[in-house]
Amino acid sequence: MTKYAPSWLQLREDADAAARATELIEPVRAFLRGQDEVVVRDLGCGTGSLGRWLARRLPGRQRWILHDRDPGLLTHALARTSRPGNALDGSEVIVVTEERDITELSAGDLAGTTLVAASALLDLLTAEEMSRLAVACVEARCAVLFTLSVSGRVVLSPKDKFDIEISDAFNAHQRRVTNGRWLLGPDAVDVASGVFERLGATVRRAPSPWRLGVDQAALTAEWLTGWVGAACEQRPELKHDGDAYLQWRLAQCAAGELNATIQHEDLLVVPS
Image 1 (cartoon, rainbow, N blue to C red):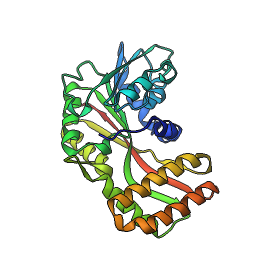
Image 2: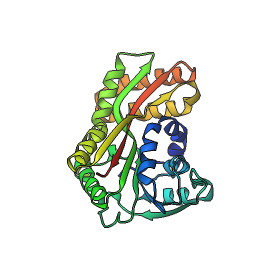
Image 3: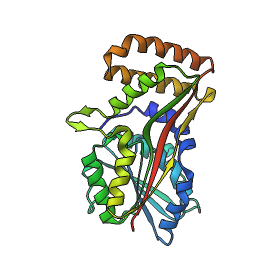
Image 4: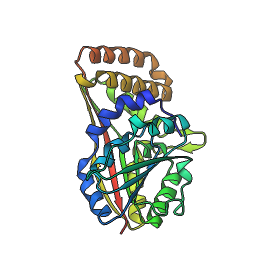
């Protein structure tokens, strides 16, 4: 699984918070109603940003179990300043961490879990890993909230004819084979939705786009650099034009002349 620097996760946290599909929160609350304690497993938790956003929107006493393979990120997420505050109704929120490979979770591991949650994770899984995780969640009868999965659609303003070529190459990079694993990339939400529906669960989807403008110039510049870099890694023949394109776009960003919409999707699954 890919590792991310805390600086990148911190840079994107406000944009993530603004993008998450709030219309899925009420159905989550409805599922949790009547629980003495809500147990949430945050898969690939990073610095814990999902917990900081979601815990205060859910009522009742909560126990968050943060999963990640990076011990440094778990330490960061467990720090006092990184923990979520109280629940929606003022109830206590307890946070613990668990270092493990989330692709190996079973229904037994999820026993007693109320909600499995994740942010920007699905595109990093393979179809087999996604299917195994879905079966574990359905058998454990927990709800699932997967947020901010990339959908492969990017709109830049002003537009340029090279945008589509970079976007197509980036999407191919997201679907690449790495260490013998064929990543789902922008197909992840479609695959996950299909798996959960075949297992009899109720699935809801909602858009959660990043909308980046002059106030998010630092994030836009970092995203642009990674977006173009991945595209050129996938198709090395794009590098010469890609470098010039990137410098032009970065100059627009610095001048406050660039807006970007990066589409994501959120997915809510409720067991039948």
